[in-house]
Image (cartoon, rainbow, N blue to C red):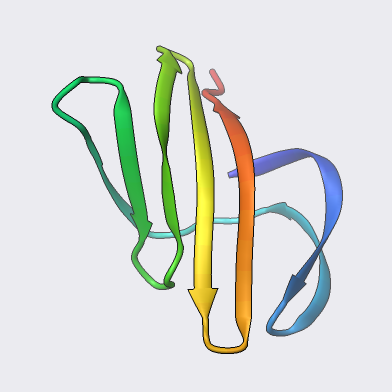
Length: 80
Protein backbone atom coordinates (compact mmCIF):
# COMPACT_ATOMS: atom_id res chain seq x y z
CA UNK A 1 0.00 0.00 0.00
CA UNK A 2 1.06 3.59 -0.56
CA UNK A 3 -0.34 6.86 0.74
CA UNK A 4 -0.53 9.91 -1.50
CA UNK A 5 -0.08 12.25 1.47
CA UNK A 6 2.19 11.75 4.47
CA UNK A 7 0.55 11.27 7.84
CA UNK A 8 2.06 10.78 11.29
CA UNK A 9 1.18 7.32 12.58
CA UNK A 10 1.59 6.23 16.19
CA UNK A 11 3.09 2.76 16.32
CA UNK A 12 4.85 0.45 18.72
CA UNK A 13 8.16 2.05 17.69
CA UNK A 14 6.94 5.62 18.23
CA UNK A 15 5.51 8.22 15.88
CA UNK A 16 6.51 7.58 12.26
CA UNK A 17 5.63 9.04 8.88
CA UNK A 18 3.25 6.53 7.32
CA UNK A 19 3.82 6.61 3.57
CA UNK A 20 3.67 2.94 2.57
CA UNK A 21 4.36 -0.63 3.42
CA UNK A 22 3.55 -4.25 2.79
CA UNK A 23 1.49 -6.68 4.85
CA UNK A 24 0.37 -10.28 4.53
CA UNK A 25 -3.44 -10.44 4.40
CA UNK A 26 -6.18 -12.96 3.69
CA UNK A 27 -9.65 -11.99 2.57
CA UNK A 28 -12.95 -13.07 1.12
CA UNK A 29 -15.84 -11.72 -0.88
CA UNK A 30 -19.24 -12.47 0.65
CA UNK A 31 -22.02 -14.40 -1.11
CA UNK A 32 -23.62 -11.13 -2.28
CA UNK A 33 -20.48 -10.32 -4.34
CA UNK A 34 -20.16 -6.91 -2.68
CA UNK A 35 -19.25 -7.22 1.02
CA UNK A 36 -15.63 -8.08 1.85
CA UNK A 37 -13.57 -8.99 4.91
CA UNK A 38 -9.76 -8.84 5.04
CA UNK A 39 -7.67 -10.02 8.02
CA UNK A 40 -4.02 -9.18 8.59
CA UNK A 41 -1.80 -12.24 8.74
CA UNK A 42 0.77 -10.86 11.18
CA UNK A 43 -1.44 -8.61 13.30
CA UNK A 44 -4.89 -8.44 14.87
CA UNK A 45 -6.42 -5.95 12.42
CA UNK A 46 -9.54 -6.64 10.35
CA UNK A 47 -10.93 -4.65 7.41
CA UNK A 48 -14.64 -4.89 6.62
CA UNK A 49 -16.42 -3.12 3.83
CA UNK A 50 -17.63 -3.37 0.28
CA UNK A 51 -16.56 -3.25 -3.33
CA UNK A 52 -17.60 0.11 -4.80
CA UNK A 53 -16.56 -0.71 -8.38
CA UNK A 54 -13.75 -2.60 -10.15
CA UNK A 55 -11.14 -0.06 -8.96
CA UNK A 56 -12.32 0.94 -5.44
CA UNK A 57 -12.86 -0.65 -2.04
CA UNK A 58 -14.51 1.16 0.90
CA UNK A 59 -13.27 -0.32 4.17
CA UNK A 60 -13.43 0.16 7.93
CA UNK A 61 -10.37 -1.03 9.85
CA UNK A 62 -10.55 -2.28 13.44
CA UNK A 63 -7.60 -3.37 15.56
CA UNK A 64 -7.84 -3.99 19.26
CA UNK A 65 -4.75 -5.19 21.04
CA UNK A 66 -3.81 -5.11 24.71
CA UNK A 67 -2.93 -1.49 25.45
CA UNK A 68 -3.29 -0.41 21.81
CA UNK A 69 -6.20 0.09 19.42
CA UNK A 70 -6.90 1.63 16.02
CA UNK A 71 -10.04 2.44 14.05
CA UNK A 72 -10.32 4.23 10.71
CA UNK A 73 -12.16 4.32 7.38
CA UNK A 74 -10.47 4.29 4.00
CA UNK A 75 -11.24 4.11 0.30
CA UNK A 76 -8.60 2.10 -1.55
CA UNK A 77 -7.96 2.75 -5.25
CA UNK A 78 -6.37 0.24 -7.63
CA UNK A 79 -3.25 1.67 -9.26
CA UNK A 80 -2.40 0.83 -12.89
